[in-house]
Image: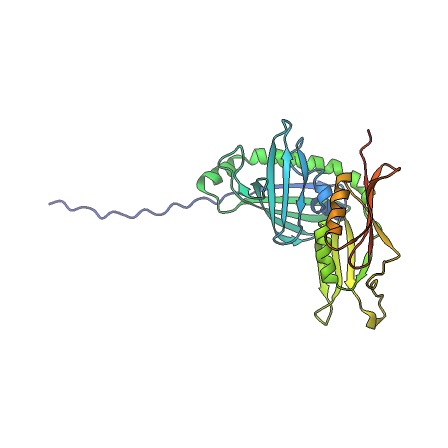
Length: 315
């Protein structure tokens, strides 16, 4: 009687590691300017996305766990939504986020045209000084892709190269236009409750927090830095015991006003509304001016005065 040979178990086949996508370009601009182009919402809107696509103003909350949500308008008028879920903000060296397609309500969706495109891609962007220039490297790695997603990603490196190259071309064209817009004077406010003021400025101005250093007492903020309306705003709590200045008292107004150039007349109205509904005193409601702008003024709950100026498009 013949005996069956014992079956030899198959060795599990190893899936070859998926090669990430990497693209590098050196820009003829200092690192501070290039980083600002990636992290300032107004600047990002002017170059981000495939070349020839219009990116509509989106929400950018530049912090770990924050979201950048935007819409890309194609030439036929159709919209594609995108989203960053920010994992690490280590500027000026590195920015890391999860990149995915989205919808109008910030959900995570599939690629509208490529069914097996990875649902989420880990994006790591590094900025390195090269003399007066800046080397930017983008690394794309799918997050836990299915076999079909991995195959699709591997097959589309040439398409990714073309897309990113187009974006980089637009960025290279935009950087010289930013040079004249570098902020050279930075307001530094003293407030009676810096933590509360930071929360207020985030709500009204969509500001993002870059730095917060606490004092030894663990209660007051020694120094904080915000990105606000594309520029920097610094602030801290009162430290009168060290001879520092005090904030305006309740009912008082600072003799100095902060003027903001707003991207559109409509945003002047929206920002003023957010301010007065969040506790500010409206001193001049939005109105059209003789110099061709939409203009408004208010005093925030901490006694600091703000002026909003949004130039109207020329007819």
